[in-house]
Image (cartoon, rainbow over all chains, first blue to last red; front, side, top):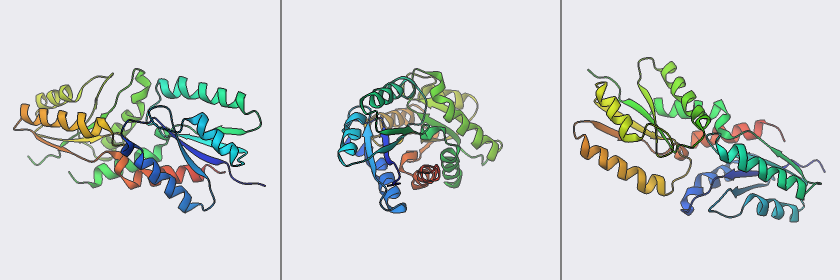
Length: 124
Length: 124
């Protein structure tokens, strides 16, 4: 029973459904690269499911551990206040669920290196 | 006089100044990798300078061409409506400035591959 934690890609959300498409591509990419890995999307606002709803659904599916990946570029109030508050609430509500969180993807140098590569390779 | 266009990294903006730090790191990365390249930041809201202000400052510095890189993950109203409107306005105001724009960085597969790599390498 040493299954990897389910991954929750946690984004801001937007009114336009197309906004979430890159996150859906990331989900597909992860599922393809690690077959069997559970990957779900959750949103802070404007889109469903919310993070608490996503966690409830994963619990119903029998997940015992989740890892939340904030798909945000910058660290503003959403990541400094809203996200920690959500995590604290979830941990209180589900004391037996192992809830981990990574840093925001915008803190990962490799992401910015990929962006820089692309900008410089698109020619000047 | 075949200088490369100045790069404008165009982000959403936020109330917390720390939010822009990763974009500043990207600017430094680009400047280091291509010495002499002009790279500036501009924001849609909540942070200065705005895109029009940034373009005015670059014109004052003698730039004749700019390339705007939208540092957004998803394509919602900001990129479908606000950004094209801003570009159209800038092109009308500065007919002699060559204004190009790339796709949003969230449309670049390499960016999501870098994110997927990082998620999978952080161990399960």
